[in-house]
Image (tube, rainbow, N blue to C red; front, side, top):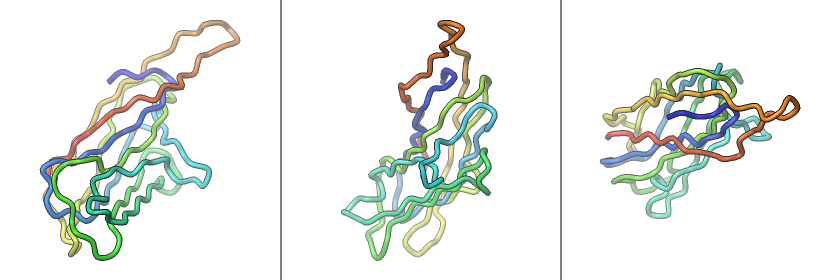
Length: 160
């Protein structure tokens, strides 16, 4: 997908064909020379929780942070809380907000990523990378460089 410099977009992680899912643990690796993870005021990575794990009105928790406060790798933990029924089927796991800060091409990929059942046993899964390309912007005048306020989406779906 082609993006413009200064665009923000939601990286949407979805799951399909899932059975017995209680939690997810993953690392998202991205090119820090062209993308930055947008941070909240408390320093956490801006995320949105999807609806997949909250099936059956389950309480869920989502935690996202940069590795050692350095750009390039995000640690994500997503889990149901307490004794809850495992989730099945398809749906949205979580979204991460990124901003384009440089021109170039790169991949957003997953590393050391696992899906767990309620007994904390890993379940087989296939995680897919996404390529992004950030292109330059047009300069309207010497004094003004437009900044996109439109947020776009890039989705990736996991096979379980």
